[in-house]
Image: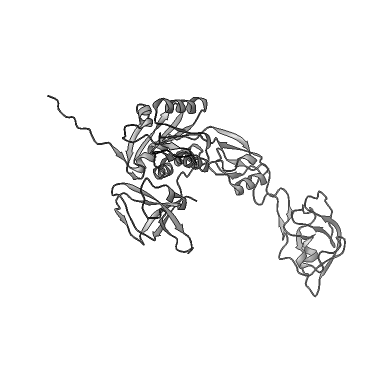
Length: 421
């Protein structure tokens, strides 16, 4: 007599639990030193210290005249101070004229201030300011104080001080600050090398003639572009049928020939009969259910030194899963201090249903027409949020993230919104 055996229901993890597993395995990659010209978007692995003082020398903050304060402290329009000009100092000048009482030097912004001068009078406070350089300087407004309009050496930063600390993401402003302190190279974390594999016998290249049962392949485009946007180097992008040998070959190539730090697959992780990723990797990485919609089936693990992500096959599921798990891992590998998108709490312009017990990710379009009261609405034309939706992603610039204990969102409700740009 054969007794039926009951299968235990799969353990369902929360999004936070799955994220915690992923981030625990996502360590910063080995640092490397690069020129600042190639460091845009990289994350500092070590603090940058100023090589020189900023400013490097006492310099003029204005176009005008370098003077001795006592010569001009009583100047007015009715009783101007007249000084003899003995030098013309443009930015970059190395000249060092010696000023004595009654003398001045014409000086331009950024030029070194003569050591014997202690104040700069701007042209606006003189009469007929920009005449021939050696014409007399006629000061009609007294400076407020001695030292006016002089930027002192090191007043902004001293050599050896920290310009940018480890973990800083290097954008144009940060790189400019670093260059201004005389630094030309920085130590940054290496970019993750990512291989993308999209699985499915039904997939055909975009633009190809489609046979019955085929659909245009889009997940590889989606994943590759999302990886690049997250700062990774995409080393290969492939589409493969649901044949174990074909998938195994691509995976081996990515891991061994490509030396991938991360492999991201789409499709083949669910409970169907032809789930190629699960068939090949069921004993090597963990397949689990996550309480999210879309994106419930997930796979994650490590093979050798590479992180392996197995995402569902529907484009909306791929996009939401990437945001929840892959992107944070890629940023963690780059040494980022913050690995999550910025969140806002915004009102919805339309309502929708949400599956109780699953954290829902709804692609939404932001309405920024009122700067004081942004709102969101579902990006899909029919207002729905199913995992199969793809075309509606074109309108999305954020995700509404609905808590697992919410069954419906009504127009006007406040929801957490994850900004994508």
